[in-house]
Each structure stands twice: as C-alpha cells, then as structure tokens.
Image (cartoon, rainbow, N blue to C red):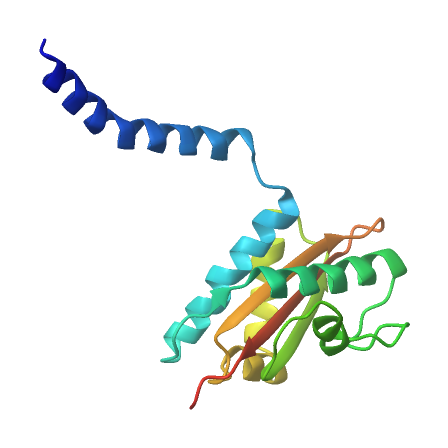
Length: 168
C-alpha cells in the first residue's frame, strides 16, 4: 500500500474513531439520576412550547447552576417555596452568580415518583398549572436551566429558571 493510500485511510478513519470514543465516554460517564431528570424536563418543556407555536428554549449552564442551588437548598432545608428561608430567591442568586437577566421566571415542583417517572410528572404538573404554564409559554424567554435534588425523605425537588429578552 502506498503512503498516500495509508494517509487517506487514516483520514477517513479519524471521524469514526472520534465518534466511537465519544460514545464510549458517554457510556462510561453515565449521568446521575438527577442529571437525567434535568435533561427530561428540557424536552418536555420544549414540546409544550413547540405545540403552542413558540420556539424551543436553549439550556443554559449558568441557569442550571442557579436552579441546582435552589433545588438543593429546598431538599437540604425541608421547605418548598419561591422565597427561601434566607430570603435569597432565584433573582438574588442570578445576581450573586453574575447571570444576566431581562425577563426571568421560576417554576418549582416536588414529587416522590421513581426516577423513571419523576421528571415527566413535574413537567405534566407545570403544563396543567396556569401560572407555571404562563412561564413556559412566555414569548420573551430564550433560555432555561433545571436543577433537581432528592431530599433524605425521598422528595425530588425541581427548579426551572427561565430567562430571555426576545421581542414578542
């Protein structure tokens, strides 16, 4: 085999090798149940938006961080509410973490379903609750982040933070 043919074969094999390595990495670094639940909420919320003629939202790492802080706080301190005991709500956390905001909102939920069902139940509850659905369908929002945390008593807490500045 000539050197040119070997180089061509290597060039053709590199994308396949990269794909295999990426797939292997995904298998060996499996997500936590919480991260899987977070991912399920994105598809569920975006399905509701698309069904209602709105563009899907983009997951945002900074909003995920704020949402995780909120859910972990509720799980650790055994409360459920938009105003935490320390008074620092999602807007306060966005400001503390340098997260830009224009229009912003928060949906929270909790349930005790197993990991296979819990995210779908949270999305269904938000989708049938008028104030939560108002956040989901807000035309200004462009990005979102979800945080999920399981408390010692088995409750799974959800926080979804929305943000955007789209003209409607």
